[in-house]
Image 1 (spheres, rainbow, N blue to C red):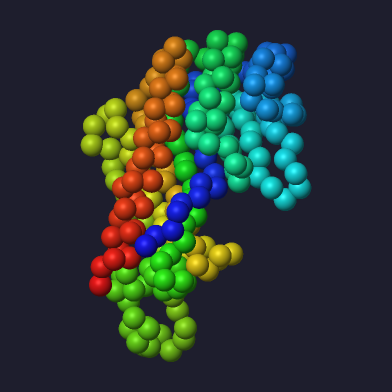
Image 2: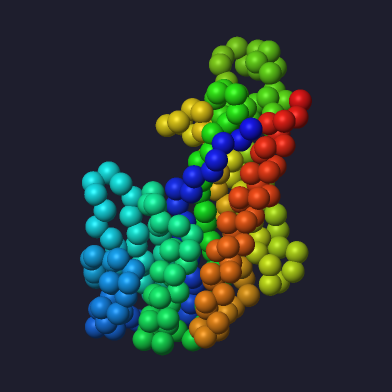
Amino acid sequence: MIGEPKTVARIVELVHLPVNHDPEALRQIYSMVSVACGYDNFIKQADGARLETAPPAGSGGSRVMFLRDRIVFQEERTDGTLEHFARKVEAVLKAALPKLGIPMIIGRTITQRLLLGVPGGESAADFLSRKAFRIEADDLEGFERAGQVVGLRLDFPMRQPQEAGHRIRIESFLREPGSLFLEDVATWKIPVQGANAMQITEELEQVDEFVGDRVIRFLGGLGRSG
């Protein structure tokens, strides 16, 4: 049975019309959200600014970047829940969109990355070879060298304009041979008015459901078959 998934990163990328950011407006946004969102640092950049936590050395962190044509949220290797991350996104957008004069979000991309263990204590590469591709060791003998399946990719295009398209990447994880690395990159192309930007919380939940239910159920089915 596929192991319990562990989310290691969430990334939200919100594309908007280009804006020449006022550094003072960005500092005001930092003052408005720093306590609620746990951002410790304000770092001015050439085309905007970055707000971020100050995590212990060697660990992940949380940040939001205001660039000329997009706002990017990144949460990596933290213990925060989906609900906590969504509240942080909502708080920043509520403060930032009117302050920066951004009337709408043109496009959204949400990326979720997870690790999960393979059943039976075997390596992820062997699991993919045997269960996903039905490749046995003797099938590779013609190469006259050792080889392994690294991963697979699945593409699920949007069926209607309001729906997300999903690009799935499933690979063996080099640092943990017994774990699979799973990534879902979900994209919405219908613009959203700034006043309705909080629907991004619903879209975060949709990605979490698509990965946690459909993709992991697919992998679990491979583990039970054959």
